[in-house]
Length: 363
Image (cartoon, rainbow, N blue to C red; front, side):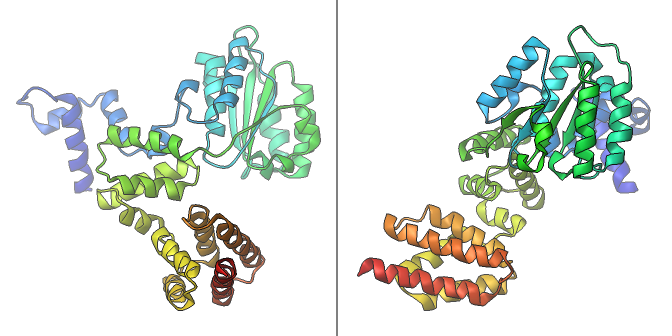
């Protein structure tokens, strides 16, 4: 408790009296805490994924064409029901919230219902929460509608989706639905036909790098270029993952370099994987196996190892014909590992096949 009080005192003093040397006591300062002080302190403890969540369309990174379509919707006001499908961490929910803020303005809190369908996914949620909200009367500007946001909508049961289809019909005059999902094929066709479908793709490495550079500058993060490249590598097109990894590394080590990033993310190091693949390309299975055995001894899951092998193989500097053979063999072993044959024997067999492919290509 004493430590907490000390931290609160420090943050309070910094906000209330930043420029002048006041002679007031610390107790006096604590009695004059302003709402601004609390806001600043909460910002310091806020995860960066929330602190830097875009509030408007202009701040959203990537998927420019799709975001532009939604911006057109917001300008006319009469938005259709929409489904945004795409991988995690690319801005689906953020885009919907930005759209709702522009459309509803000051009525945002009263006229928006946000549910995570992965937890509230049963038919009772549709019958109770969603139906009750759709029936509520809210004063809105002309041409505006209440908005119900369903995150992870592909987790809803079939019964809940059928009930939702009927609710969308009954309250179409007053309410619009915005669904965010990873796989649109898990949403029944009856709902898909009632919605405008928007698809998001993974963010490019350049887009993620630009954003995390802005965050590093804002948070005064100490970093090296290889550290940011490691953050981008581990993110794989997921902005949320990139910011989480960046913040975790900064909080843990106070410096972002590749070694620290891979300690935090705990993935097989790509330099080790690259060295292993190059040994296979040189048909040296004994050295390649030593690296594989080392990764196995560190406790990495076979699926993590094979995933990183594929990521590195895509950019490996070898003959194109040999790279194609490598990727083909990696893909076959990946299938077997996903099906449950996740032993060291499978990964060792992969190394043997890669060495064989290298020998055939050379000859």
